[in-house]
Length: 509
Image (cartoon, rainbow, N blue to C red; front, side, top):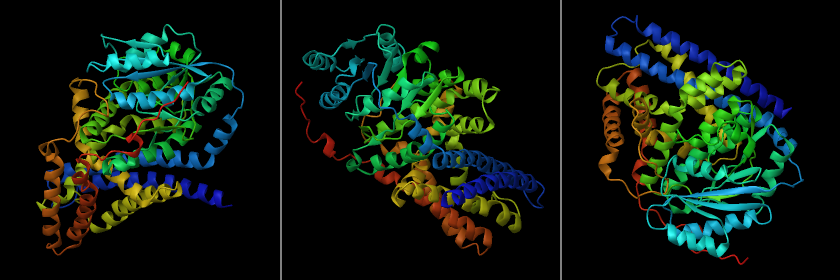
């Protein structure tokens, strides 16, 4: 009975969300005919409601995935369990300019998890002089070691060079900052073994270095919504894509699309789109079988987010061509892919939310509508979406701190989304960098966030002194936005050493 009530509730939220998107469109049109509204008012009002439509689409996809997660995913996972195990797997471990001590520690864990099941291959593209030390370690452990001097295709190229030569039927990819449990392959390989139509099995990425500082916790909060809610829903309808590590592929599926996509920075998602377009199924297995490291420096975090954003945005034409405009996919699946494909445009839409109170303080009314329309359209829509977001996180056992970090993460780094969009439009590619690159960033790099914070503080004082309902409500919105962008002061700090890096362990084979 409780489950049915939950199902009806989220169906209702889905319908109401669509309704408020429609109200928002009508309200933005009405704003153009409001007496006294200027052209500037109308332009920013249209931009504002476009942002609401964008996040409305995201929330619809979110509600659909949450509903699938609660209703169907446990069945999907249970029906996929299989205790048989008979085929071997190649475990490919890409390395690029990594800390030798972390390589040693994590390679030991990967080797242990592969014992008697898979054969480990180390693919080293390092250019910082660490290659010789890595080779010596692999020689001692009797692990095949491949070092490239020509980094064509970056990570995808390194994987493809080896894939064309190895005989194994299944291929696991494990980044060197990950530490799999001994059961990783024993639980995932049987899932591929029993279903020939399955292209990949993805397990969550669980950060275990949260004791390094606020940044790792923010990155973890950002990951929570994906690995605990969205991925379960995507898996139910076969929309799950590879996340680049902690994943096992069927080699035949990779061969069917020409192996990993070397033309995109997010080779994992690009390759997944190619396989799904060809009719391959995918599965998310939500069991914490691998423990990894969150970015601990702001430079590394920005590098990671920029790479994810630019690679994903470059895939938009392919997603629309191969999935959205295809008759093979359901409407619900297409909504999910539209939301996923367009997500990294978020920076532009967070920007209008952030500057709206500042514009209001300067006399530009972003919501150039009357009080009735404002209350009917925008207030319920915003409360509904925020409330749904919080309730669904709490339902998945997230703490309120995780909810806050999740909401703050994308607001804090909104300029990365904007820069990635411009980079894709003007076809400017940055060199490949990992999330473990660099350290603190100079504070001048945060001028967009600091400027907006100053503007929000200014707008709060001006709007509170205005003495009207519009000023009070907009001032409240300014305070809310200020709280979300405030963590920028805690993110750009030198990290503490995590307990998982305090000492390395040695495994005798």
